[in-house]
Image 1 (cartoon, rainbow, N blue to C red):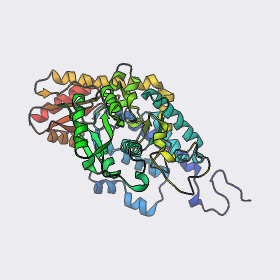
Image 2: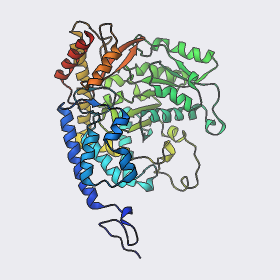
Image 3: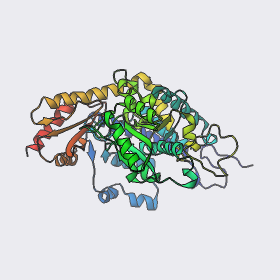
Image 4: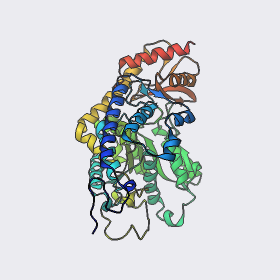
Amino acid sequence: MWRMDVRYGHHPGMTPNHAWDIDDFVNAAEVTVRGLAAYVRESQDGAAPVLRRRPPGELAGRLGLARWIREGGMTPEIYREWLDAYLAEGTRLHHPAYLGHQTAAPDFPAALADFVHGAINNPMAIYEMGAAAATVEFEVLRWMLGKVGFPEGGGVLTHGGSLANLTALLAARAAAAPDAWTEGVPGDLALLAPPSAHYSITRAAAILGLGERAVVPLDVDDLGRIDVARLPEGLDRARRAGRRPMALVAAACATGTGLYDDLRPIGEFCAEHGLWFHVDGAHGASALLSEAHRHLLDGVELADSVIWDAHKMLRTSGLAAAVLVRREGDLDAAFQQRASYLFYGDQGFDLIGRTVECTKAALGLKVFLNLAWRGEHGLGEHVARRYATAHRFWELARERPGFHCPYEPESNIVCFRYGNGDQAAIRETLLEEGSFHLTSAELGGVRHLRVTVMAPATDDKTLEALLDRVAALSGL
């Protein structure tokens, strides 16, 4: 019997190139931790530009990518310099001036989870490959199901909200057309969704075999929220077109505006007409943790399925998104897969039957460690403070001449304009100078600037500086 060398992780006959050099790992890990700590501290202090984006060719040369790919040979000492160069480029999500996309400034416990998974690599969709990781995910899902109001429900964590929406709508398709998996998709299926729905809804319709034209737009108000009073008209339009709606999609909250659909009457309408009710809560479901904001999701318990991204407002790194269903069996029916090397025997603890992925990362560990450190109340406070900061921006902008805000924010997302100039050009200048990172969206066909408050470091000073800079750029 061969003898394992603990230090090098190999037995006699294995070459060192196949070993994990524990000393190098420890040294490089220390370099990484110190480098990242300095990076986050510098970002939170606003001591560097919020983003740098050199052209790919220039950046590849600066990082020596072709050489390292071709030759190898990096050491912990060289890696220290390389990591510094790598961290100097990109977007600093912890920066007070990061007001861009709905991506979390990760808390350090989530970073620890990524570090652990990077070393042990337990792909836990199959229980025998990661019992601890799978068990953590079970309990995180149980917690999330309780918050949504699905005591008899089921769920799975997946890699992102787009995949979560697809998975939930697969469950809806299975309920409407049980034979679709084997016989193909009936040509009369449809989805009812507002035009403001996340693009992943129409993408899911195409992937599911319905086609984009099967997405029937619902009537909305001037801000893109579902007009509850006109829901019968949308359903009638679909049926008159020979379509059989398999689901109705509502937003909690909408990606573009951060506004919530009125979930309770929508859910009651769906129940009355036998429609699967899907709530895209990727961004806004975390408001369930805030006592001051959970009313925004009143009626979410009437949904048949809900998605909820932890990598947005629960401060986990990407990606970790929950698919939650009110009846556990609905998710199990979404996939009807056969593979003799995986699907046999007792699969009672396997999650592979509920998800597209076979190799699935330990996503629950990131959520769990953030909860273990900060607690449910701490994460709820994080949500409430980001929502409050966005509301403060709205208050400040309204006080200044030339600024227009089309609505009072309900979440941490605010749309605004300054004057009648090219808003996209203003944004591009801010990005080029690295002073602020924000996005834009169209409301009623008019381009607006869009602020999403994600970083805890963002304060009144940051907001005032942004308003000053936007006004200055518009005057050029």
